[in-house]
Image 1 (cartoon, helix red, strand yellow):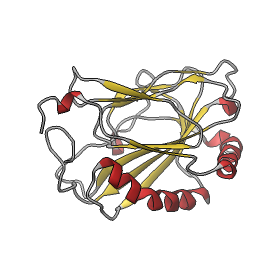
Image 2 (cartoon, helix red, strand yellow):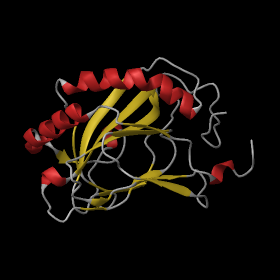
Image 3 (cartoon, rainbow, N blue to C red):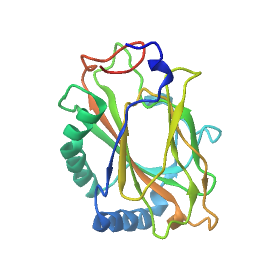
Image 4 (cartoon, rainbow, N blue to C red):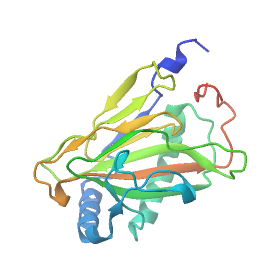
Length: 215
């Protein structure tokens, strides 16, 4: 393994036009009709979850109704492509976790990781995937996904939140959502996303404990 590997951002992949215009329309309609059920996004893990607007500012919805099963089926079908592009040894997912998030004017999520690995855990987040959707023409700016290297003095890559595109990456790499500017302030003009985490029952055999890279 090269000595500079910790200074590079993670391998990631994308799927453009992942769900199609009909599903985008359904998701937008669902978001709008469920607007009153969105709650302030929290941070942390398990029972330690709390709202901290200095770290994360957005709103989210965990119950996705009949859409949840459809989204899980599509995520399951995309797994071979994700494994290949991330360099993972294929595994059967323990479960999927989904949430819909609305990033309005001033929303952001500061640098963080999506998973922790502890001896007592029976499964962990092995893949982070983010699907972007929003009204056209686009009514916001900013909101890029910034993927950082493991090393604090390393580099990063910015990924634009393109409509109907899925981005996936290893969840133990630091990342953040850069601030969103949405001049109208209307909920329907938000940068919407579906966060999807794929859980595994054990670490990949080719996982490196020091860098998080698989090889």
